[in-house]
Length: 68
Image 1: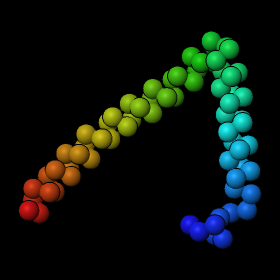
Image 2: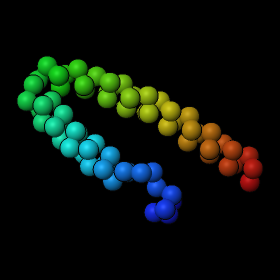
Image 3: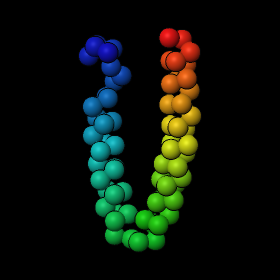
Image 4: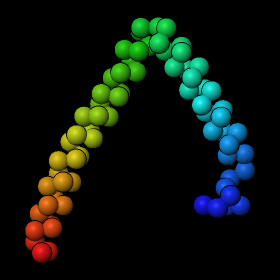
């Protein structure tokens, strides 16, 4: 995208998101109970990614061999 096509106030939204992330990260690092609840969705997301990667790689290899 060229600078003329960027959405308005994009850099302001990025800075607001950065500051919000820092504040939320600071809050979460201070309380152990919140950390335990936030780890669970992250672990589930990583497990789903691992389940998706193997079939994708295997199907890519099979298609590559068949088309060659």
